[in-house]
Image (cartoon, rainbow, N blue to C red; front, top):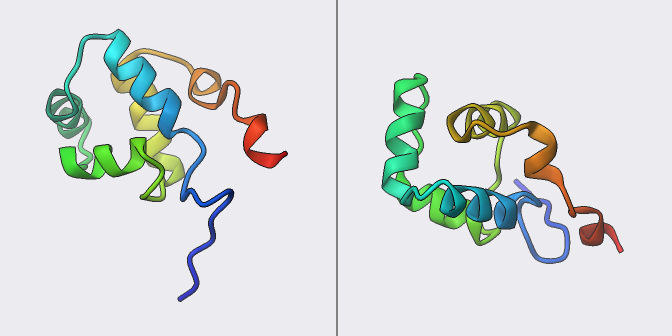
Length: 85
């Protein structure tokens, strides 16, 4: 199976995911625990890889991150146009 990447990254929201997680004062483990309460298992090591563009983020995971961080989907996608230049 071929894995698609853009500019060497597997996702475009990683930088924003890290920014908002840190702005909320959460560790990757704490965010993982919040996601677990929503019924979604994402290990803290997976969050690390997502934040660094090494792991693909599924659409339902993006939605769960927005809910857990109490931000909008638009926040996670802000300033991502540069990935397409």
